[in-house]
Amino acid sequence: MVSFRDSSVVIIESGRTLIRAGVGLQDLLKTPSVEIQARVGLRRSLGDSANGASSLKPGEGSDTLRPSASSSRASSLPFQPSPSAKVHDYLVGSQLDEALEAGQDIVVSWPFADGDIRDWTQAEALWKYVLFHTLQLKRTQNESPVMLSMPAGLFRDSSERICQIFFERFNVAGFGLLDRPMAQLYATGQLSGVVVDIGHEITDITPIYDGFIMQNARSSTPLGIRDCQVYLANLLRSNQSVMAAASPPDKPSDPEVTRRFLEDLVKHVWMEGLVRVPSDGQTVEIPEDEGVTDIAAVLVAGKEKAVIETGMKKKLTAKASAAEQARAREIEALDLVTVEFREHSITLGKERHRFCEPLFDPTLLNGLPVERADPYEGRILPLQEAVAFSVRQTDVAQRQYIWQGLFVNGDLTNHVKGIGAALQSRLAPFILSTPDQATEVQPRSIRVLTVPEYFAEYREKGDGFAAFLGTSIVAKIAFNESHGKNFVSKTDYNEKGPHAILEMSLASL
Image 1 (cartoon, rainbow, N blue to C red):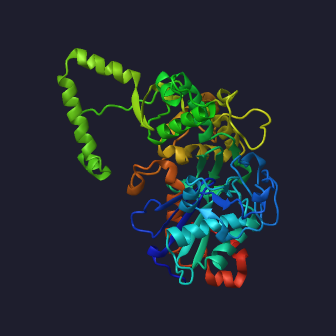
Image 2: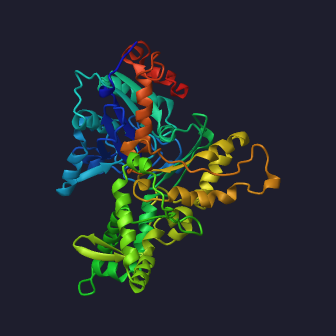
Image 3: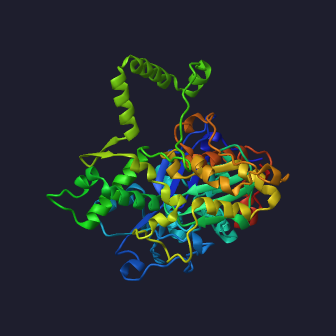
């Protein structure tokens, strides 16, 4: 039996645009210690493609390249293949950031942006940087097993090649491969649901039933954070405070400079948590407490300071005059915030809460400069229609269980609250609510999932770290499992080669 110390286990989450990693599994599962953009850079003088060859379009390939499984998953993020480049030629993480800040002539590529692997050398460069540079592992004395989560729908030969890289290039002690949506759902403690992963420019929708991904029902829609940023940046052009900073009347900025300023401001605003998403036709209201405080619950949640501050605020408000209270309510209704951005003090109002509107109504993007990988034919489905369509592709008897697990996550949910409830309210028309038409298998409600609060390290982080948490949970179980069926050991790999990864059965967890 293979035995691993929890402190040696490595967790890697590879998304389309981000890689998160950490080493060691404690009783209280930790958040990732490493987070880098999933991009590589090559100095223009080193690569064949950098010397004049054009970049590949989504779907094209070569010996070292792999087209995406679905054209709807194609990304517009840049990809520059260079068949002659070696792993050590690529700049990654802080190396790449510093080179770009210094103004060096760097060709940037995003090898995971299509949901599969565009270039194997670039992928290896990213994983190598994470393992040996940021996590400080030693290849010659590598006693660490690795649990890696990747986007769902990898080709079988892609899974085998990933396994081969980790054993033969990185000398890992054991290896497990997990579908990212499955990891995200595991983080909520459920086995059935529909995972909605909002990315930079693509949202992946994955129905899951009883621990198995419904592969025929998976879909992606070309909507994401980028669209929301472009939309709000356009709305802010009518805000005088914003435009005075972006393009002062006495010294107007170049249109391109103004556009970048607005989009950078929008990114700053949502990442600071200044955006919330109201439900369809209503605002999300937080109920007042009824004068009774559960002291034990407050202490467990670590919120005693917040409760004390709230109580003091209420006492001060009670002493304020009627006029002062009326003025405070007026200011609160305006919902104004002042943002410090690039040495400017900028005042924003309620328009910032319209940030996520394009996800639910893509027609709002008509006429706006949104770059896509290919001209999109037909109507882009709103997020609620895309989710409903995916769930409809599953068996009728499975749908009531899938609808009981609507889990919206992605980096956006780390900073913007209320997206799950907003999507839930917009999905209501797709659920039969007339009692006299109901059947035994007819869904009657939709339940929104979140990461449970008993994961203390994740309590204030939002649901965007769900994939890393779920991968950690699986690793803790798999690498301590007596039969070793849920990962590939070195012995397995030596006997069966890369094909051993296809015999791994995480579904049995």
